[in-house]
Image (cartoon, rainbow, N blue to C red; front, side, top):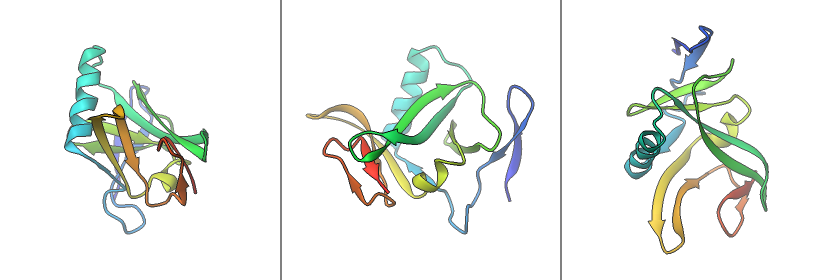
Length: 131
Protein backbone atom coordinates (compact mmCIF):
# COMPACT_ATOMS: atom_id res chain seq x y z
CA UNK A 1 0.00 0.00 0.00
CA UNK A 2 1.29 3.46 -0.87
CA UNK A 3 2.42 5.71 1.95
CA UNK A 4 1.79 9.44 2.08
CA UNK A 5 4.69 11.88 2.20
CA UNK A 6 4.52 15.64 2.54
CA UNK A 7 6.08 17.86 -0.04
CA UNK A 8 7.25 21.35 0.77
CA UNK A 9 3.85 22.90 0.03
CA UNK A 10 2.25 20.32 2.40
CA UNK A 11 0.20 18.51 -0.26
CA UNK A 12 0.36 14.73 0.06
CA UNK A 13 2.20 12.74 -2.61
CA UNK A 14 2.23 9.00 -3.02
CA UNK A 15 5.37 7.11 -2.07
CA UNK A 16 5.76 4.45 -4.73
CA UNK A 17 5.11 0.90 -3.73
CA UNK A 18 4.10 -1.99 -5.97
CA UNK A 19 2.23 -0.84 -9.07
CA UNK A 20 -0.17 -3.10 -10.91
CA UNK A 21 1.26 -6.18 -9.24
CA UNK A 22 4.79 -5.24 -10.27
CA UNK A 23 7.35 -4.52 -7.57
CA UNK A 24 9.67 -1.57 -8.11
CA UNK A 25 8.72 0.09 -11.43
CA UNK A 26 12.27 1.23 -12.27
CA UNK A 27 15.80 0.03 -11.67
CA UNK A 28 18.67 2.48 -11.15
CA UNK A 29 22.22 1.13 -11.24
CA UNK A 30 24.81 1.86 -8.57
CA UNK A 31 26.81 3.90 -11.12
CA UNK A 32 23.74 6.01 -11.97
CA UNK A 33 22.94 6.62 -8.29
CA UNK A 34 26.56 7.60 -7.63
CA UNK A 35 26.48 10.09 -10.52
CA UNK A 36 23.13 11.53 -9.39
CA UNK A 37 24.54 12.13 -5.90
CA UNK A 38 27.70 13.70 -7.38
CA UNK A 39 25.63 16.06 -9.54
CA UNK A 40 23.50 17.08 -6.56
CA UNK A 41 26.62 17.76 -4.48
CA UNK A 42 28.35 19.71 -7.28
CA UNK A 43 25.28 21.89 -7.75
CA UNK A 44 24.97 22.44 -3.99
CA UNK A 45 21.52 20.93 -3.99
CA UNK A 46 20.12 19.85 -0.66
CA UNK A 47 16.91 17.87 -0.32
CA UNK A 48 15.67 17.57 -3.89
CA UNK A 49 13.85 15.13 -6.11
CA UNK A 50 15.17 13.70 -9.36
CA UNK A 51 12.32 14.00 -11.84
CA UNK A 52 12.34 11.54 -14.75
CA UNK A 53 9.77 12.06 -17.47
CA UNK A 54 8.83 11.13 -21.01
CA UNK A 55 7.88 13.84 -23.48
CA UNK A 56 7.21 14.19 -27.16
CA UNK A 57 10.21 14.77 -29.38
CA UNK A 58 13.45 13.23 -30.48
CA UNK A 59 14.06 11.20 -33.63
CA UNK A 60 11.71 8.37 -32.67
CA UNK A 61 8.74 10.27 -31.18
CA UNK A 62 9.37 10.26 -27.41
CA UNK A 63 12.36 11.37 -25.40
CA UNK A 64 13.49 11.08 -21.78
CA UNK A 65 14.05 14.02 -19.49
CA UNK A 66 15.89 14.35 -16.17
CA UNK A 67 16.02 17.32 -13.80
CA UNK A 68 16.29 18.15 -10.11
CA UNK A 69 13.28 19.79 -8.43
CA UNK A 70 12.52 20.99 -4.93
CA UNK A 71 8.85 19.97 -4.92
CA UNK A 72 6.47 17.45 -6.40
CA UNK A 73 3.16 17.89 -8.21
CA UNK A 74 -0.21 16.31 -7.37
CA UNK A 75 -0.32 12.75 -8.72
CA UNK A 76 3.47 12.34 -8.81
CA UNK A 77 4.93 9.04 -7.67
CA UNK A 78 7.99 9.24 -5.43
CA UNK A 79 10.37 6.28 -5.41
CA UNK A 80 13.25 6.13 -2.94
CA UNK A 81 16.34 4.72 -4.61
CA UNK A 82 18.91 4.30 -1.86
CA UNK A 83 18.38 7.86 -0.65
CA UNK A 84 17.81 9.44 -4.08
CA UNK A 85 14.15 10.42 -4.35
CA UNK A 86 12.98 9.79 -7.92
CA UNK A 87 9.73 11.42 -9.07
CA UNK A 88 7.63 10.26 -12.03
CA UNK A 89 4.49 12.03 -13.21
CA UNK A 90 1.36 9.96 -13.90
CA UNK A 91 1.52 10.42 -17.69
CA UNK A 92 5.14 9.22 -17.90
CA UNK A 93 4.76 6.28 -15.52
CA UNK A 94 3.31 3.79 -18.06
CA UNK A 95 6.19 4.51 -20.46
CA UNK A 96 8.76 4.07 -17.68
CA UNK A 97 7.48 0.84 -16.12
CA UNK A 98 10.33 -1.66 -16.05
CA UNK A 99 13.09 0.68 -17.25
CA UNK A 100 16.72 0.23 -16.21
CA UNK A 101 18.68 3.45 -15.79
CA UNK A 102 22.47 3.28 -15.91
CA UNK A 103 25.31 5.78 -16.18
CA UNK A 104 28.13 5.22 -18.64
CA UNK A 105 31.34 7.07 -19.36
CA UNK A 106 32.92 5.51 -22.45
CA UNK A 107 33.96 6.32 -26.02
CA UNK A 108 30.44 7.60 -26.74
CA UNK A 109 30.75 10.09 -23.86
CA UNK A 110 29.33 10.40 -20.36
CA UNK A 111 25.58 9.91 -20.18
CA UNK A 112 22.61 8.29 -18.51
CA UNK A 113 21.36 5.28 -20.47
CA UNK A 114 17.75 4.11 -20.30
CA UNK A 115 16.88 0.54 -21.27
CA UNK A 116 13.13 0.52 -21.85
CA UNK A 117 11.23 -2.76 -22.35
CA UNK A 118 8.21 -0.73 -23.54
CA UNK A 119 10.07 0.79 -26.50
CA UNK A 120 9.18 -0.66 -29.89
CA UNK A 121 12.19 1.07 -31.42
CA UNK A 122 14.90 3.55 -30.47
CA UNK A 123 16.90 6.07 -32.42
CA UNK A 124 20.57 5.56 -33.19
CA UNK A 125 21.75 7.78 -30.33
CA UNK A 126 19.46 6.05 -27.81
CA UNK A 127 17.94 9.30 -26.54
CA UNK A 128 14.47 8.76 -27.97
CA UNK A 129 12.08 5.87 -28.55
CA UNK A 130 8.72 4.93 -29.97
CA UNK A 131 6.04 3.12 -28.02
